[in-house]
Image (cartoon, rainbow, N blue to C red):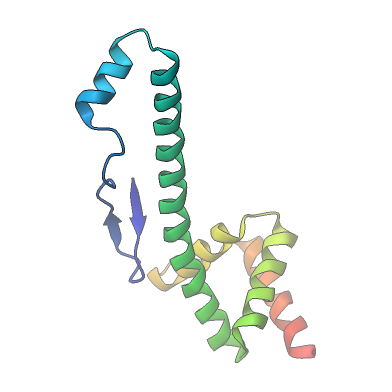
Length: 131
């Protein structure tokens, strides 16, 4: 899985140490599981899913932090106000906040902000200035 670091460059995470050694996992997968083996296998699957979810969360958090900094610089506001702007854009466009952040950060690579996001961001920044 490719994620992006703070400099927005691809980062490949090495898999975390395995909870179950490979030979044990092969044994679990290759035989009819006993009740204990099935429980262990279910735990391994759950832990791997959780690990993948946390890895994605860390990657999207970096982009969210970058987008917060961009909004703070644009609007000369606190991080709390910048967060409110991103949330408002996310809700009005019905797009996940991490995707709004990714689109905003992508503008630093000469990509244009999609029209609905641009419109909502402009409106949210105006709303912020009115406060």
